[in-house]
Length: 389
Image 1: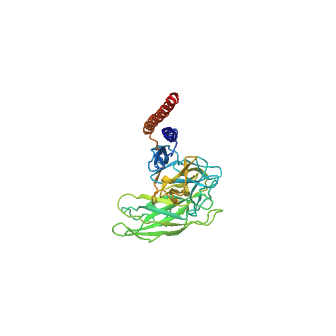
Image 2 (image 1 turned 90 degrees about the vertical axis):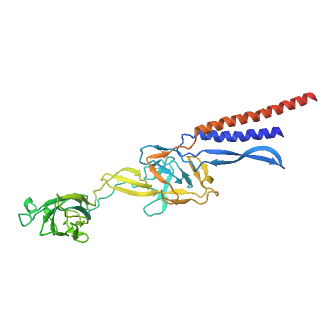
Image 3 (image 1 turned 90 degrees about the horizontal axis):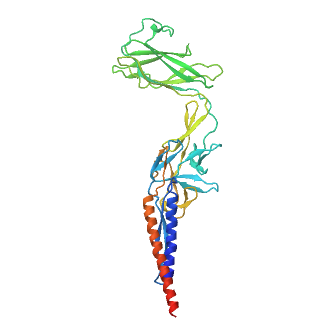
């Protein structure tokens, strides 16, 4: 019986050594979670029969250190959760290794070439893709101007207003707008002080007068009281393009003493552009950068959490699959619910503690030698017994 008990001990220790060696081998694997072999005593008809590996525990709740990479498509989850990918056989796998890229067809893939799952423009869960072509030009439709009209201005000495005569206006501001063909035009606003706290704004595009003047009125505390809402400005029809008009908002503009100042002067619209880069944002959204400076979102990474993440089954490629013990995955986005936030430009290192593993290795070696000693002692006793007969 002691021979079989010692043999069971050696077999169990071999299982422990396999787990320890796997941990050590994956100490440099991104997103790896260490495991531990749990011994369980064995009995047959209430008689001791040795020991076996009762289960294997995974240290899922222990996070590895974050390693900065500076790469825009790398991300680590700070907290609970797993990235979701679809393998070539259609099965879903879950990983902590946030190293992503975009293939030639525009599919977002992980480092094992599996298709990353997320929420597209429709809001449905599926393969994340990014556009591979360019984006067409978009005509400007609004302009936001916020500034200070100097209360020290006097009514111009020259009337009526003439854009070519600086003596007929007090200040000016230029803004670039875009027509439907993606061509840029310069819209200039000319500010003319009126009686009291009133102001008139005249407009020109590319040096030609356009639209009708707008009246701005301020109260005795320098706050604008008119106009309420935006002002529609007809800019005419650029050659070959669609008619161009913009809504100008002056909300927040003031009239205080001192020089004229501009806090915001921005129009929407943009020229056509081609893709120049793809990166991740902290909320997990895929940001596509275009040559015209425009940045658009192409979806958002899905993050999965589980009621019992220790029930996940490890598979090839630094990933896990769900099992009956995990429950159904709870899918969401980074930083929402139980899902952790993303650290962009970094990856999560293995959580293997090399010092502990080496200590465990020495303990396993001693246990192996002890069980081997039992076998050799048993063998010596049997030899002595046979010689005595």
